[in-house]
Length: 155
Image 1 (tube, one colour):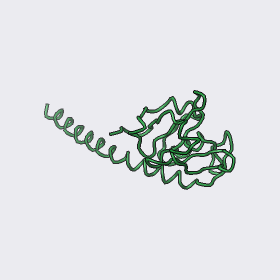
Image 2 (tube, helix red, strand yellow):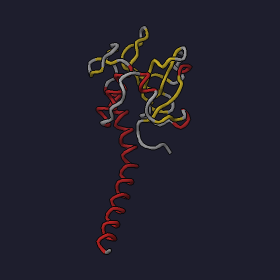
Image 3 (cartoon, helix red, strand yellow):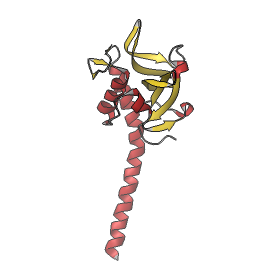
Image 4 (cartoon, one colour):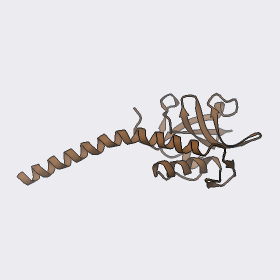
């Protein structure tokens, strides 16, 4: 019986340490995602590509998550938009993935930088490659349909 109490005590201490470090890891991961994404500003857009030399939108988000956090996301905008945890836009945090649609079809994803901006790989006339855009952008703003989190709990 004494051995069981000792093992239970070790398990409880280990569990609290794990939970405590997980809370801190969430913020660290968010910063790592943002900093990693910013490193690729100006990289070219190329449909179907996921490399440090060129990205499409989902390839960019997927690559950043893998490099910064070791998190493997689905490959397409549509499958990213159907994965993770749904988050209200008012509760979105930096590093969450913003989902966009045109005519009811998910067709774009981006990483939330802060309450007002995203970083993403785009191909729109003079705006191409990995850029930062405002959430109030007249093209992207109205097309936001949701936010997905692939990180730990939202508070």
